[in-house]
Length: 390
Ligand SMILES: Cc1cc2nc3c(=O)[nH]c(=O)nc-3n(C[C@H](O)[C@H](O)[C@H](O)COP(=O)(O)O)c2cc1C
Image (cartoon, rainbow, N blue to C red; front, side, top):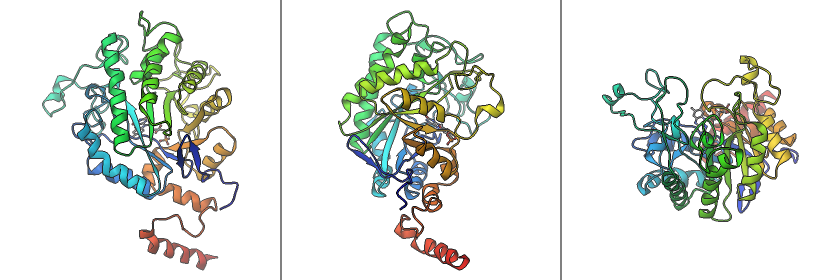
């Protein structure tokens, strides 16, 4: 393999070695039943292991029942749910990939319709009960709706917070019991932990709200408790919304403060996403203060500058995500030092063999040696065509 290709350089974090720098971003499938993984989840996640992504994250996996975004979301609030995921995790590991789990609580964005139905993504109402989707009470730092027309969440008291923290810890223990090697805490996209961080979601007057120190208190308590429950050799990631993109929202400066604090309590990697706190972002997701246009919003690598900023200004490793499509683009992000890892979502759903194609394109695997042995006939044929065209 050409020595200079970073995308396929293994990365050791604590005692865990990722075989390459390609990460499957968490991808909700809205296809679970009562939080239980179904054959779809096995099929979906094992495809990425066949494609040889270095680290395969599960979708946002709820630590408690009321913390699901929809009734179709995965859960790990009991042992039987964890057991249902075990064959998937074992398969991922058997392919030489590393299995990770994103632990999540939807907070005030819970109790919504799965995307596949009419008005998908909007809050459940009593009308949905008839088809088995009864709404439930969402919870949040403060009784503020996500946006106009959404129901008011119930404000969490300190007993509730202790219960949720314990649910994150219990979920972590279950995850390791089924062979998960990496945990990612979902602190982004307006879900519970993000809504504590952002002044747009948190208007509490107790020690969990107020200035940034107080708003960070609960997410940091959760991170510390999860870290303490994990084996020392296992990496802990946190996905953040590096900016809210809204007036008076969470900023890149705030993210740098959070990352310093997370790093000192044992979070190893920050996964830099953005937005989602509620309503449409109004500003470009950088410090320019420029208004957001559809062109500036989501171009290739649009969130890479956040990963770069966190990596340059804090001690934490960073992962870039968002419209990373092309192998050369992914390689340049790593070569530039902007990030230690790249996560792909939609492009990997479109082409789960992306890592193997990237290995070919970057000259790392010209002879298709990385492909699963069962597919040897397929790649022999490709090699033959290649030779004929030379
Ligand atoms: C269908 C779908 C489901 C997603 N589910 C999650 C999720 O469970 N957790 C999360 O943090 N982000 C989730 N995301 C965001 C992706 O992980 C990723 O950050 C985003 O799609 C940008 O990366 P991409 O351009 O490579 O798709 C989801 C995105 C899509 C399209």
